[in-house]
Image 1 (tube, one colour):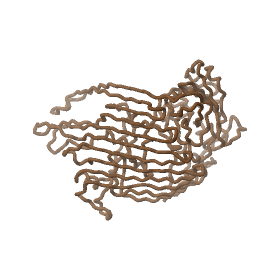
Image 2 (cartoon, rainbow, N blue to C red):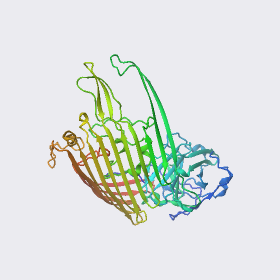
Image 3 (cartoon, rainbow, N blue to C red):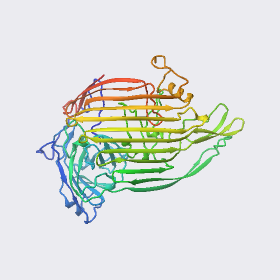
Image 4 (tube, one colour):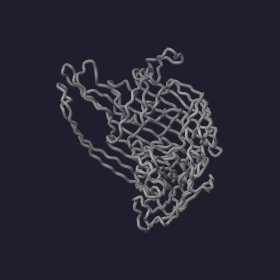
Length: 591
């Protein structure tokens, strides 16, 4: 789980608890040091396979020793935990196997609550693997005492993405000493080099729910400068080869709906059905780089968005949940403000219809809810030498509505044109992974017709971004810039000028004016920020971002509101040592 997430506060004291928990340790003489730890694993190739049953009784586990001496991370950092944890790691040519022994002298205190994937309360234990060994990216695998799994992809030294859902296996068990867990992680789900002998970064975390306590195998100071860069090392991995993925999943879906017939409505006859087919594929070009393909995808299994109503007129941001777009989505991320504004928002692909067939003389209409994705292809990944690359292209079909007018005449109306989407992203790490430089390009092209000319014919955007960290990542300087251009007829560009995002027509906008004859808009935006992000109890940042009035990226990105210049300063003092009054406190000042 992500310990580095933080909430900006404004002149307030955050009291997380009014009770200080006693820290009775199983190992009271534990010597706490933040020096990098290492664990040496061993191959079990040729031995009897480990059965994932949570019992830890397979002979193959005897190939290695237990490692322990977990140290409390929070609330009382760098102290012995209330209960200790042990871990073993072995491997063969296809899998990594991990065993945990989580001590609890009173098993009835183990909190076993069921939950959905990536979202569960109760006791859990976790393994993070930096198989790139780049101090920036990692793969996280979490097991709850009740057997619920969680998995996250970690990027940029601490950004956790729970939408990553690899294939792996686990089992837990409760006994008189506490609870145990076993996991098997196929090497095909990890990304690593082809060196004969490898060193990976690892970290293990345990949540002891009864005391709301978290302890880590590699001791981590309070307010660390990064999460992945604080990992220990896993040694002894020899002779494994990167696994290329090959997954092909054809599908066929049949739907039949039965409902009450609506008299006079030719589209509501009481029943209807359809049969669709498609294909999903994943091809490993190398262990680092993957091609994902989808033809006529069906996302019927994806959770629906929560109900929400926008009272201010601005668009509500919803997270991406569709599997094709979730995989490696962090590769395409290009956030250029301190909010959710982004040059690529994948939910624009297959979006709800932008046109409507309803008119003053319309009696009945039958139209789809969303545009149909005919196909999409994605090439993405991160190489051993620090290149992160991503290219995505998708085509959505034209959508038509069947219309019956009040006079009985029938017609067909275009409500969404044939559209092509393209995104390209590249980023390069350098300076011993402490810095990066990147760029992005997006394009949207529509096959327009007169009846739907209120949309942009073409939309382009691009940007450059960088981040430089120094002093063991305590200090950083980051920046980004964007450029956008949209083209269309006078109606389309006028709609953009008057939209809630731009509001050129507002009375206080003396620096802009509505031009009904324009057929294009070109805008810019960006951010520059300096700060101290960790390595002490004081944190601060100072920066500025700007969005020009003409900036428009919503054909393939997300922009809540343009025409904004903002300077900001944030200073925070953290109090991480628990007292009789609070467990953790933050005093902050924003400007």
